[in-house]
Length: 64
Image (cartoon, rainbow, N blue to C red):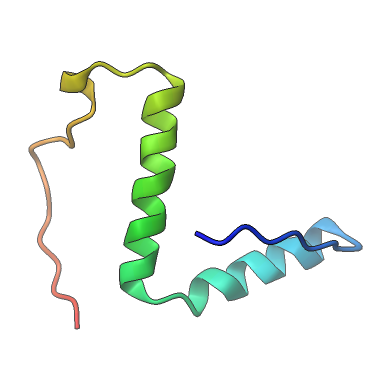
């Protein structure tokens, strides 16, 4: 994930930019960024190894 600093004049303008960014992002890149966020969260709560696993219940979705 590249770190970029942008300055906005309002929260609405920043929100619009976020929505546009994630709408145009490649699905595989979205998963990569989600894993980075998840890892950061688990590190911040000092999660034990057994807490780092995903739940065993999941749904299968077809992707292109």
